[in-house]
Image (tube, rainbow, N blue to C red; front, side, top):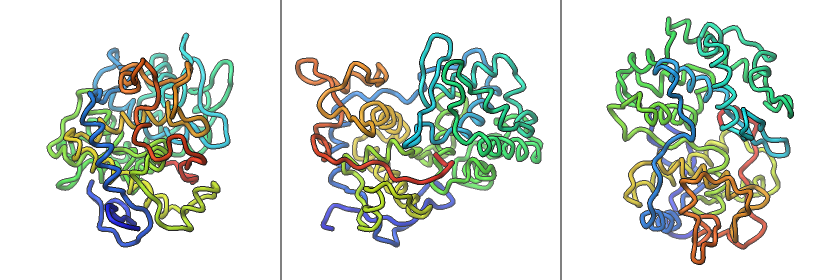
Length: 358
């Protein structure tokens, strides 16, 4: 397929690094990554952070809150189905933001919701109740399976005599991927966190670092969490290319890919983000994750991407809006100037797979 591509075809190893490629399935377009890295290096990239904080929680409660929240967060904007959304107070929220705000409200009402003992006994109806919207009703998909993940989380914690996520950190002495035990291998004992590409594990560790609660002895092993928004965005920009014709045909027609193909695709996006983190000089893949995730879920939408202009309904967080402003105060996707899909149709979607990893 020409020069400037790095081929990939295997999953993430037992640590945070990637294994050597064995199958010419999905490739990282090195030149496209460098173009995007040059654009990133010319702009001020906001720090990685959540849009809400939890100042009223103790550090131990924050650790448990995020451990539970990340465990149940997957497919909040499923293709062909209504997205997770609703009101929390006066705010109308979507996806992760709604899930987080509803769990926070539930914790305020019942502290036990953050305990492994509560998790180990939860059922689907209880989980529905935690995230039910007063107007839209039950929008949380697969409550039975999510409840299974939560029960496993509680059971595994209790089995190890852990009541606080901080005990996982202490046991691993702050090691992400070095030594034994380490945080990646320990989190993988939970069914919700056993993804070979470590999406939820990296996301949880990033959240704990951004909250100022955990520091790591090997921070270079904190990779970017990769979800479907980031897959869609990087396939469209061209930083990642599907080289296998049969796999590309599956993606184009929305056919379900295999678990192995899913790993190939997300691994390539992981490697592309790591490359851009280095080439841009930022050397902070988590910071890039927050940028990509917020831009792609807000501007690079499935059906109406903001290549030419952002509509008034664009939900790009305020701190990223300066990146989307062009001459004459025109506002559009921050990556439209270097995106190979901008102004072209049809645009690729993310691949289809039934998974609870992201």
